[in-house]
Image (cartoon, rainbow, N blue to C red; front, side, top):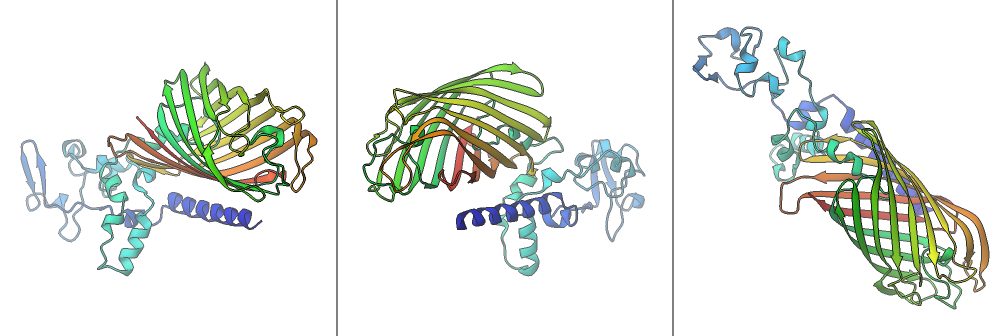
Length: 414
């Protein structure tokens, strides 16, 4: 219960801060430190200079302002003038009509904090902490990197289109009371003691290769178990190999099919694997609501092969998700996500907490809610595009399934 309240408070606070900073137009230029007026007394043209004394109508001594109305072609003739939004279009009627202040390209996570700290401690140099300084130096008026990555933002659900990447995932799972349910997490007969609860940590490495039409993937997982009855153990869990292919490739709608094979490489006697091979196949959909917002959906069926009689069973999973752009520039983006997944254990069996006798199950459904987000960094380094995703999951139905989950996902792609 404490974990659920803690996660809910963190999510509400983070969402409130993010929305307040990303949407508030007040104090934007103060926050990012962009100049609104030209500071130079000379403007360079191809054929020479304009002196501020010779053309006083273009400048003011107290606060020089670029006046595009006085010289009609000035906006096009002067690089970096108000056509580029560098001056905020101040004093330029002809530019103000077609020049907007791109909030997403100017805001960065530390910009507002840096401004407030510098106001209180003017002698304290925190420029090395302000990652937004580099972002602003490289911004343009075009759409930034957030528009290129928002369709890949989910951390839990699969997406109809993936990009070739190498990924690392660290997942913490707490409060599983029925670990052998349908042999979905571990195999039956793992323990002869009355297990009352299991916490687990998974560190996974995955490789996805291919293109937007077809993709192949592999995943290896190192699992660390903390059961209450069994001794703690750490080792390799089951390996995953799979592929997905595009079925519908529309401008707004994407539909793909996916097939995964779970190979029993983990020790089932230690709880590190299920002890049998499993197949999972299904459909994955993506819908473009707007260039900034995407919807996701999935329908998958998990089926064990050669599992324990009366315990192993089939699992139907469904999912819905949404991602959007909260802030972005040419080299940075923050993409909030909200995902919902259901796991319906259609039949099979489970051993209740504190018991050594299994019982049949019939249509038990766990509903998991995952608020989260993804940061995107493009530093043009040898590592390529770097993405860091996070999600905090809670089970809002089925008290015997995992209570809470934390997911941290690091991805490198080109």
